Length: 192
Image 1 (spheres, rainbow, N blue to C red):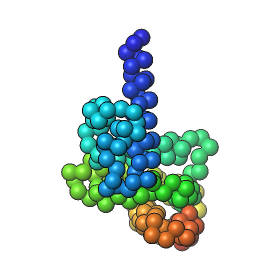
Image 2: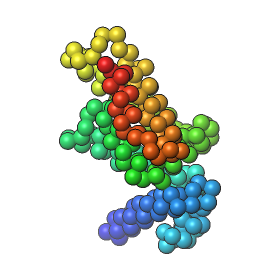
Image 3: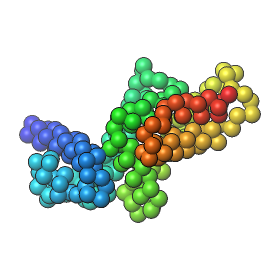
Image 4: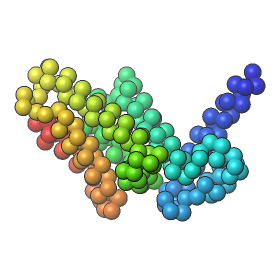
């Protein structure tokens, strides 16, 4: 019985650390987010924090993984929006209300181009899953006769993901940009 209780406490502490990290990241930025600050604000020792996360890069990657798992669960929910363009538009709308998450995402996308970075595998898997989900949606639409026959599903999926990531980067420099509208318009143009 005690093992279950200890496990539950460990899971809760890990989730608290992830939430706190995003708050610190949003307030301090990537350079000034330190394990020491996260540990202090999480009410844990630095050694205790490092029991959960080996480095700041691992910690930041896990913050993003947790956010992506939550988004994937929302997409898989029975009442979820199934249209990929609309789903990405809604995700971008949520990001516009959480600048810290958007900044973390962009920071880790850039860092993940290094194969040694902890986020490398995450983004490789994330992009593959996202593109495959869009391709599957397009294939279903094509079977129903709702898409033009010359539409290239692989190109369309890659272009939509590129538009989504690209507009988020631009939005971080100019918050007046309507990311959701941009992605909806790109999706309509690609699938028209």
